[in-house]
Amino acid sequence: MSPDRQWWLRVPAVFLSPGSVFAALRNEEQGDLDARQEPLLALVYLAGIAAVLATSTAGTLLDDAEYDSLLVVVWAVIAGGIYGLAGYFIIGGALYLGARGLGSLGTYRRARHILGLAVAPLALSLFLVWPLELAALGSDVFRTGGSDDGAADLVFDGLELGF
Picture 1 (cartoon, one colour):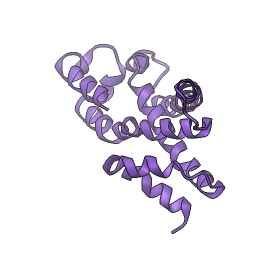
Picture 2 (cartoon, rainbow, N blue to C red):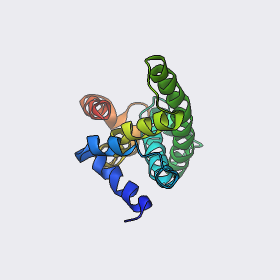
Picture 3 (cartoon, rainbow, N blue to C red):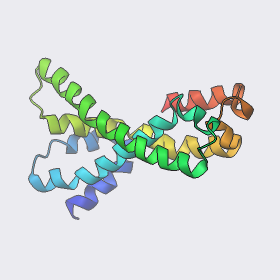
């Protein structure tokens, strides 16, 4: 099996057998390093989208008359990508420096890859929590007040925090 295929299969495996997936990060062969770039980038990108949708800014987007549902999707994709990639490199750097300060011999790339796998639950919330929230509350999720004000909002906030 090709290294590319192995890493795409390891993405969902991180939920079932994280130890084996994180152990696979020890392989520093160039082919393996190249193969894990796209799956980890996809995880980080999806996690960034989930993160920006959970912000207070997202909760007020449709209060502005210039925004519609399509623009909210475009905003989430663009802002989520920026948010995810910036966090990937900045927080990955902080993780690297912290680990290095504690005596780790790992590389900056490995620190970023560990972070990329660690945000997998956040990326999963985009597919488990957000469809339920949008089905239950509709576009009120992106407005101040409305049907998402109260217990339902607290339940979904708790689910998002759980991820």
